[in-house]
Length: 224
Image (cartoon, rainbow, N blue to C red; front, top):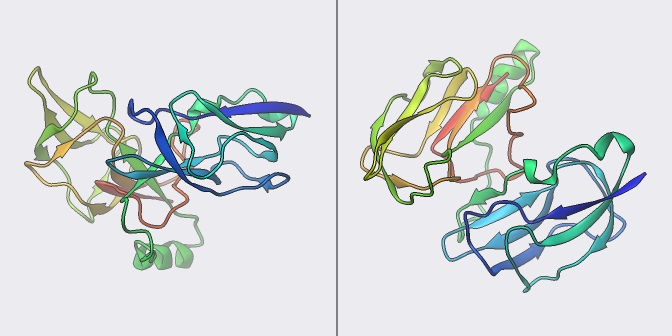
């Protein structure tokens, strides 16, 4: 067994972000991607998931504290197999700051479809990639529609900053479940703006589905 420290991951450059909820307690046994804490900035609230499974042996923060990227906030006791995982691999999951109560399944029809086929389906959130630190970048084109079947690498949206335009590709193939961005909107790096469901097993580089029912997202892809 080994002790693994978990730092606050990339939170979009924000500092002194409020800790509004601690989701675990000392002695808890947790799974990878389980929520550890909930943070709230002036723009949004976000859950910080655990990058690996283990037992909580130390909590270094309390509700009401403020944290910044890189601050160690929890220590986990993990098996040797889990020590080679990077704590920074699990991004925070953004969700709208005020609304967290109405949590209904995002696509009951998709769940029913996957159940009847005897396959496991999961939703893949797609974040805005590195856009050179630019914020509030214009969405000049939306390349997909809800219900579209897409392949890995297909363009989802086209962004344009004051320096250049860029296409945001899909990290996986699947079916577009939901679109919540339109031409003329503005997005920033790290925002969850797409969800997709991939046909086949997700690769190791594919982010795990968020542990909340209604995160902020611009596309949902159904991964089977």
